[in-house]
Image (cartoon, rainbow, N blue to C red):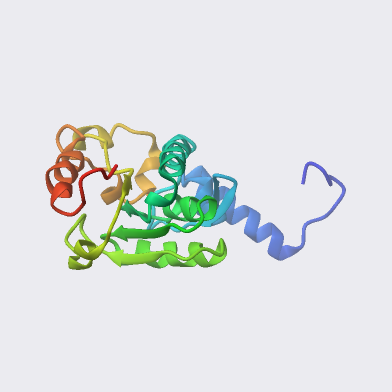
Length: 199
């Protein structure tokens, strides 16, 4: 509109703009309004069923890529726990060749979004519904790298966050009393599933 100030909006465009503005005035995140977000230079479809990818998480992916590349052909598979929109798993699949990528999530709705994003970005991911390591198929994976961006916000602090956060799934935010519940569960459970030398 700013670039074409003389152009008159069509009725459907005016309605769409008015609806978007109403939603934004209610503090709904722009990513949910647009239904998409960019991450690692890739596009991801979003709904309120999944956590919005953050630029900070790109650092996690970049670090995982460095570790994976340092392992060369020794690294055969990677597991992304709590994949949400699939942004981490899909980015790894996009930038790594000859590595099998597994992605899990407790939410069936999130997995459906992640599957659509894998198709959108033309990568092959093996998706499994699982509460951390509850899916027995994870015992069969020869996994050399595990990556996860778990919920880390202390329960009592969630209500004090920006109003936009209230639109995101609480399951992707709530890390328990001190924010470390999922870290403890992962550390306690993971050794039973993965071989010595895994990252």
